Image 1: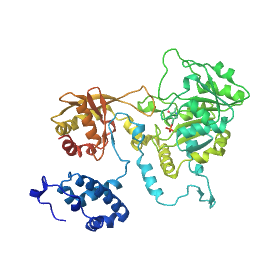
Image 2 (image 1 turned 120 degrees about the horizontal axis):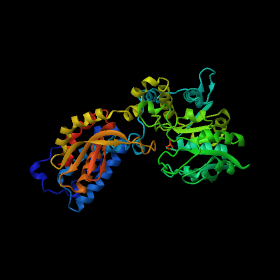
Image 3 (image 1 turned 180 degrees about the vertical axis):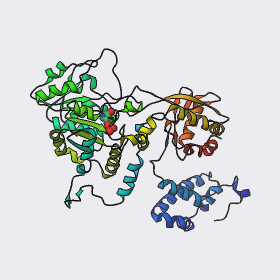
Image 4 (image 1 turned 30 degrees about the vertical axis):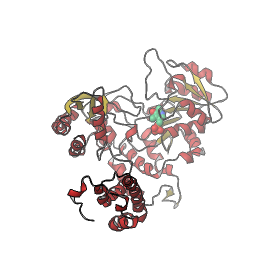
Length: 474
Ligand SMILES: *Cc1c(COP(=O)(O)O)cnc(C)c1O
């Protein structure tokens, strides 16, 4: 291909007959075809030529675009091979952000995924007996050790754990839930719908703000299969309230011969108040309080992959494991490997703060974040000038994912303001940030774009893109 002659390029329009035939274009792009194969390159080339032909017929195709065809084709092919799922910078201030993939995996979990997923492994093979095994055997002992449970199993996520628990223990029977705990988690996971999907009849007791032990007692019938407690993770009822805790409910359930299940949502395996964070109920305390089944997420405060953890008594977990739906909800080998490695980190709690990114980010001290903001300020200011001004600000991060909904973590970051003061300009900035190779996701608050730096552990990921940002804003 010859370099386009600049003097001819401008203003000169191509006609359809200036376009190369498909075969000719593919021959010109032989190295691209060698790398990606004929199928993909030909498909993209055809689409590209069709588009150009339409514009050429209309007399609206600059000749320069015809000359640039090989490069354009290469760009298109590369774009098709670019995964739609990409790494981004979470500067939203919400640490466990459901839309941004929740918890980041610890190095140990990443290493385990990398080491095992390209190789056969003993997922369901008993190496000692040389016979078929159960994937639960790889993880049950560890989960029991960490939570004090008699038995444990894992499924695809906590929503699956709740659905399976209710189905296995209360299908065709009644399940009692307090009206104050009929939660919607988001994504259409609403407790009443989950009950009916699981084939259980929901029996609501108490009121939105107050439920008493006698409400549960009066609702018990020979048809009762289960009492369910749900941690109200994404909202709080304040004021004149009362609910019945697991320790009070457990003897009521036991006397009636009915299992008690509690859905903790996030569920932390260590006491977060030790790290200066707001306390979350622990599965181990729920089991000690007498719950038969406790369910919680793998990728919220636990800091692992998406998974649903089910711990409890041998009898209840045994029924859950044997229930046919379990097979459809089982945890895949990929998160399984990451989950096991994450759980092992809890065997050495002294190192958790270093080892677990979620905990590390949640406990990052405000002064350290503020110092980072101060350090980045001049470079960021230069990149967004003259249309935007930047200042450092104190911010409030959130834990996220419905964990501890009203608690805030003192944080810091950068606030970007449009000089001409119009909201559209701020939207354009936000779009430019999202358009970077490693998209930067902040949040717009009133007339400022806020970048909370709590989750920016590698500042170079931001600073290395500032040149591109400046170009995008020019
Ligand atoms: C988050 C949450 C769930 C769902 O857990 P996933 O792991 O996202 O499926 C269920 N119950 C409660 C109370 C939750 O907070």
